Amino acid sequence: MSVIHRTTITPTKLELLTSWLPSRPWYGGGPGSPKLAKAGGFRLDDPRGEVGIEFMVVTDSAGPAPASYLIPFTYRGAPLDGAEHALVGTMEHGVLGPRWAYDGCHDPVLVAQLLALMEGRAQAQAQSVSDTPDREVSHSRSGEGTVSADFSPTVADAQESTELTASDGAVLRVHRVLQPTADDGSGAEAATTGTIGHVIGHWSLPDGARTRGVFATLRR
Image 1: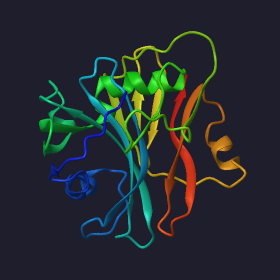
Image 2: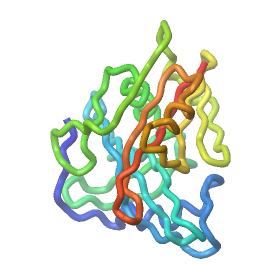
Image 3: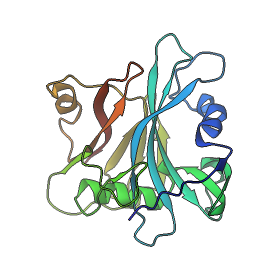
Image 4: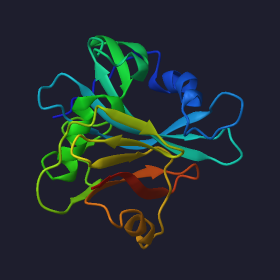
């Protein structure tokens, strides 16, 4: 289960993202630096206990209107071979020491656990509390047969998402620019039409209200 250490991290995750986000094709902020605030998210456990997995939502108030972005992070105690392009930055963790933070869409451990979450084989964990499931995260998986976790050959950043294509043709779409859904859930229902799997999460808006939206979908 996820263990949250109460310690210092230098630089902070938000500091790393402030310099990294503007380089992303799906970032829609203004010409200046992002003005970021943590807005929500959840964690997943690595079955081997080696890789930290976090889905972080940040809200940027630098543009003409606040925008919320989903950042799937992985944290490793050593560099991930062949993933230099996906490195967000390095941090010094007060308990764990040096940590390499990656855009998790390029990390096979995160991709495998995201699929496991959709299929009900993994449990979303609270972002900031140890050993506590996050009951707000909902997921679904329909259809027969398994989906290959081999999504590494193709990763394409689109305008508002990152799409990963597996060797068996399945497409995993991670929504980067989050869209709040209607209170009756109709927005999430429309966004997941035609999918065989999805994950829906919650986050806080700048006015403090809680909302939810689609974090990831899976299609054949």
